[in-house]
Length: 195
Ligand code: GAR
Image (cartoon, rainbow, N blue to C red; front, side):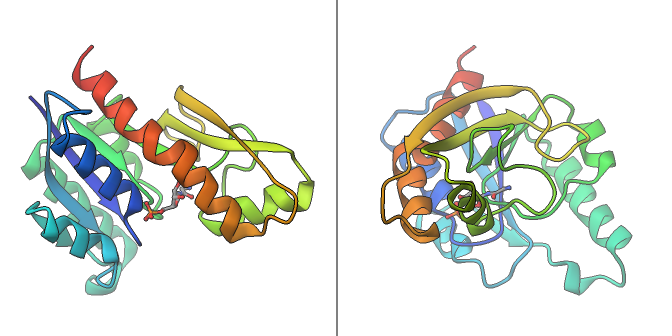
């Protein structure tokens, strides 16, 4: 049984997709044992509670500096000992110490077809704004392993999604979530849990 820790910052629709997939059997041999948010107001925390999954907030605001915040994250993860860490809309750069300790065991979902519209500054709606500004006709989502760079780790899964005339960043974000993210992330976890 793969022990999974999901890390979130906001709405938690990807977390919801994971928890539903576990409940309806599309993910087997895996259990989400902990949800960590850096944001106390993240709706993802409510979603975790409604599925009966333990959740915790580790907020940078509770610490004197970034180093102390990173140390608290590291300590909590070492205590939990997850087999897999899933970054599901976690908008904090993972410190090197955590990447080293959990090498090859951290995956991230990114809302574009990497290497397009990724790297520093590309997160959430900004990714879709950039795709629309460039005028691409196809975008999508990527699940990749996390390495020391920003969105640079080995790609695990990708799925393309059409950009439609009249799209704005929100309509495009929603389509990418529905047609790619909420499918890919559970699929990736299930693949890792059932090698
Ligand atoms: C998702 O679209 C995810 O791909 C993106 O944040 C959103 C979180 O939504 N992540 C990134 O941009 C990471 N660079 P959610 O909280 O509803 O799952």
